[in-house]
Image 1: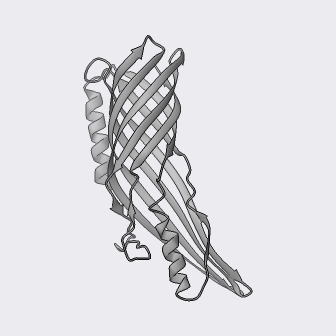
Image 2: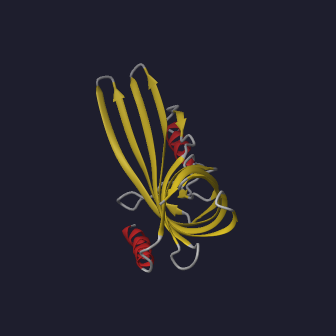
Image 3: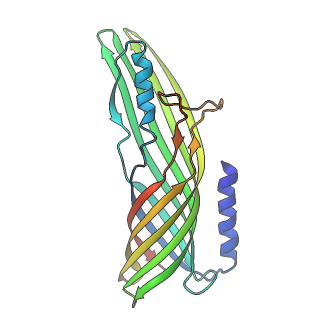
Length: 238
């Protein structure tokens, strides 16, 4: 995990050192991703089926609702040539699920919390400009996802209770071609909308012992963020 992160950071620093008089842009985006939690749905399904074998009818009350990603981007213009941009971004996403059962004797809860942190570097090139008002920028990026699923299992039986916590992690590479439209508002402030396609290499979630998560058919649960995305955000160019 650390090797992938350090590789991207190192590349970013070396590239910036080639031109220290770059134009700096900082932006924040809200990202709407489609189909991003489809792989996660296998986890509560598998848990429910395990309990059903013991004749315990667990119910899924929350099933990883789709939520926006949040992203902070920093880019530097005129790095390798006129108008060419080099940048980096940090992306955060979190969601969860709850499976529960209760009767007169007590209750069982299985709470899943999913978090993903992503770091990427990207190159951008303006492909259209209408004066200083509207511009279209094509970008290509490469990055790494750090995904975590925390499983908190709790059992309450009359006046006795017990808990167990397990963490599963995965790391994976991705690439994302994108097309961004920027509309200048005033001074250096702009609003931007971006359409992109995330291309992710799947990776399995594993705990510290190297054990993975499997669905009800015995197949490894793979994390994959591939799919279309749309971003909207504000930025400022210094």
